[in-house]
Image (cartoon, rainbow, N blue to C red):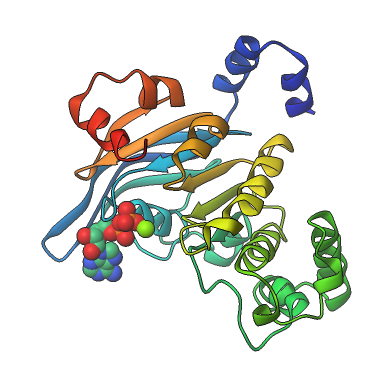
Length: 263
Ligand code: ADP
Ligand code: MG
């Protein structure tokens, strides 16, 4: 209902409404090292409800590490990550329950090649979240239908294009109706011809009010579709603002140099 209200008012009013929306994700001074390499050196930012936040930065700047900390695939060394009111860095947190609240799609190898589309989409819901077969399949078919892929439910991943595979992976990530969708360079391994259909799906999710944190090198998409961009550099946040503030108007020489590579 809130997102419907937002589209009905002017852009500036929508932004005001958005900036007062509750934080779905809050990172508070996150630190993470691998051996003696400090990758994240105190990262703090928020993703608010219905926001699309683009996480930008050069290769090796720690985007995937940050995503993995949010998805509990890596432990932070210091700091807190809040999903709503839950501190997910608390070792007593129920990891499976938390994973049902966060959907994740990676750059590649998202689908199991020996399983049909419907098996892939229902697997975690069945095995991790203990849904019944009927419930999982009904939800999966509804999601596949929504992306025009219901006819492919029985197909195997190698019978799909890379773009279709990533769309199925997104559908799978939405199975449990997560509060937050993490997308880590989901178009980077795709043939350029197939990038558009995946980004279109992300734009559709945004219009439906899905809250998304996405690492990407698709700068024009980030510019046009993100509510905010966060730029990582040297283990810290170099910029955090609207696409226009960060990508068009920043006077920081290193920021300008970074974006000049994408023009
Ligand atoms: P990005 O996604 O922005 O390209 P990553 O988070 O993948 O950056 O990597 C950030 C840095 O952390 C890189 O220097 C990378 O080599 C290092 N790194 C990432 N994962 C590991 C790991 N499991 N062990 C050691 N170093 C790692
Ligand atoms: Mg990465």
